[in-house]
Image (cartoon, rainbow, N blue to C red; front, top):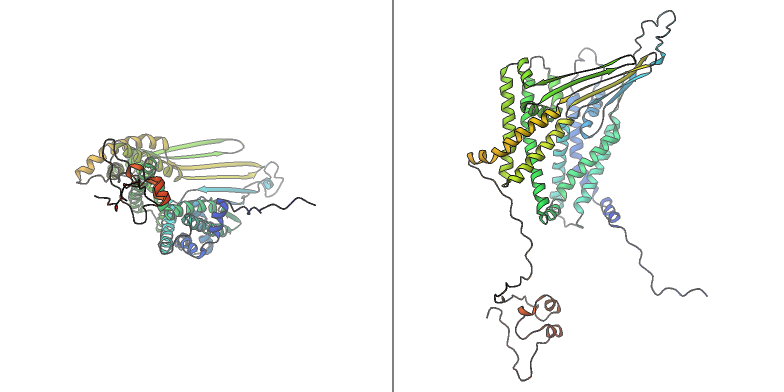
Length: 497
């Protein structure tokens, strides 16, 4: 005979918290999440089609059709989500000795292909992606408010569904954005584009859908709450400053006589890049251009910088005055916004620091970089690169000076305009159910709800000093009031007697 069966059968282990979360997320409403994800994906398609409509000088003979232009523009715009842009194709044989005779050393059979990569993040696409996603998520949030929540993580579950849908859509578009034109292949790094869309969409949707729980979490941590408020103010100031700088730079470029309409249309995809460059020039920074080339025999590097004074020499003196005015207005905008939303000097300095860090990041990624490699003659390869963008060291130096002065003058400028700062509401912890009286003060009469007297829960929470006359803990637990021998039973208790 075997061992006796156990007295009880243990219950099967339940799913882990992560497994339960993923299960609820995948069983949730995908239709509503798809409607929210449709906004940024539709915006990407509309923007690509709008830029691909012009023929770009192909009036006589169309070499690149509208479909190919659409795929090229998609590949360029997907860089705003983290993708890449790489071109590869057969190398041109430029051997002048190949016709007749022995080519000898200059045998062109060694050259097989050449590649080139372009890196220029379209900041407008990134900003529009976030705005379109916020519109879709806000509509989803308004619909969710009419339905009771099934779990505390319902917002995060919906954010995960939206992020997965946008990731899948971007992956399909990135695979589509790989045309082959006259033997030249274009790649947009589909995996990087999809991963960037996943991270950006998840962060944006979770911040909005989980905002209530996040606000409750921050309310219990005043230090973290102050940091988050400073970050929100810094992002608002960054948006205003980049918009102002982009407007000024775009109008200046549009006023040039040799600027074509197609070029102005393409520049619309890089407005934040133009804004960062304009603000950097206004603060005294410089635009840096560098070119490098190397081959099997030699190599070299050339660089050149253009600052505000050289730009004024190329145009007129008003460029210098306008650039300095733009820099002053942008710096004061940061100082005034920080003073308006934060009363303390420490928080104002934190806003300026976070803004400056974000501006440096935008300036670093908003430049242009082109790299190319080829192998054409006698198996000798050559490579070259070209870079253009803000000089970050100069931007770091002059930006600190401008922002330090603006942070100091911000409260005074705000006071001159007749406004005042709006301090945040003071943090108030939740009111306790019972507050003990101060030492030496008479005990306050507590207020009892109906049905509370005599219950075990009430006796466990109410101290002896605050109990009604004639009742102790043991009597309350037994449901009877203490009645000494020979003493009349106590009358009804009146709390405010």
